[in-house]
Length: 177
Image (cartoon, rainbow, N blue to C red; front, side, top):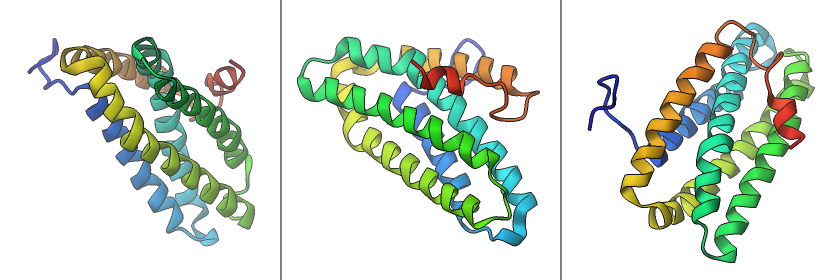
């Protein structure tokens, strides 16, 4: 089904899963770098930070509240709170990685921790939260949420377009919620 701008609509789960794949790919590229590829690491880190911050914001602002409102069981609520907490941990690791020397072993270690955190988080959402969201929210609501997510993502991409990923973003504000 086309959206208002003529693009094919993705439901919320398809959009969020696509974001996960983008970040997984960037993290895998980062994992393949060595300390001699400092410039490449900086480029990848900038892309990763931007993608993660935008994705986290749209989840926190739109998807998670809808999921929480629809939650019926203690397990549903547990998945919501775990996802929120995992975002908080990413908000701690990401700035530390951005501050590390990209040619250092410290950078490689922090990048590995970030990769592990994000992969765990994405896998948990895809394997547990998203299947529950399909049942709780239904196809029509997920399609509506997908459009809301897409529009907010475009706004954030525009906002963050001119700044270096991470610097001056709301990641630290989000972490303090």
